[in-house]
Image (cartoon, rainbow, N blue to C red; front, side):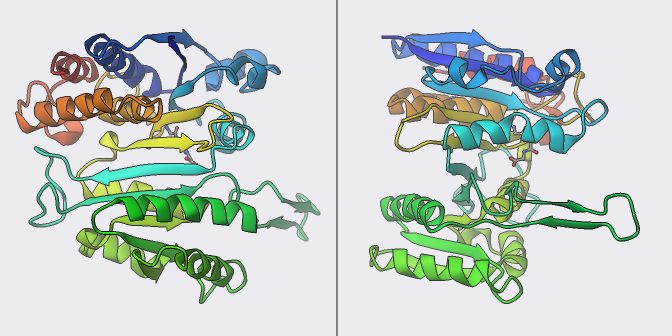
Length: 356
Ligand code: GGG
């Protein structure tokens, strides 16, 4: 039976990298005899907002819930819609309503890409950030008082629940347990944020009791960002709250040379709802419309989508294809962020051709 994939290009470079993501998925599907059925949606974009006054149609949940996966591009076009409105009106609704509580973000130095950190080779940087994805600092609990006056007060709460924290920690520990190094690093700021963060540390310690083979490190987020830059080889699985995980999963790929290659999976591990796959990068208004965005973040997210649907071999073939194209170091094919003069489409087509 065909897998039904909802395709949502979104905004900015999302519209440019998505065709390459779909092209490689189609190439892998053909090669491995997988039936994929794509259905395109124009909502969850700022263009949709301008036309309809909202980011999503009223029936979006019913429309999307029967799909096997959602393939998303990027959201945000601040010139027309403030970022917090576009993000809260789209991606964050998907994550919450579809209970995609794990945001899995691999960070790996790829062949042919130069890390800005001295002397780093492929293999030196290879870790996952597991970001809590439905609560934490991204809560909608709070409000304003005396708005617009000198007594203006704004409050936004961090919300951490035992249910929400333990389930993402369990996912991270399971992942660490499955990897050769069996190492888990937890990011908090327990000295400054003295209620929620020490409590997160306690939950990590409690969960760790069930995983005696996993070595656990805990760092405050400030020094951890320094270690990401100075010792990225220390890390294997890094688990963090919603905000800290978001920041670390931009910093990690930056250490591997470009955020343009970084993929992510917003996972509902129980499979009750569709999971969503999107590049880590946003809509990049500064380069949108020029056709030069790196499509690998979208393409690698497509590989994660296939893996999630049980097609490991096809997922591996996509990863092998972009690694081979990168390793060939042909500057006429590579996009400018990795030192080439190629375009989004040239690089995407080269990767699709390399799938076997
Ligand atoms: N493709 C990911 C995307 O559009 N990200 C925009 C963004 O700002 N995301 C914030 C988040 O992931 O919480």
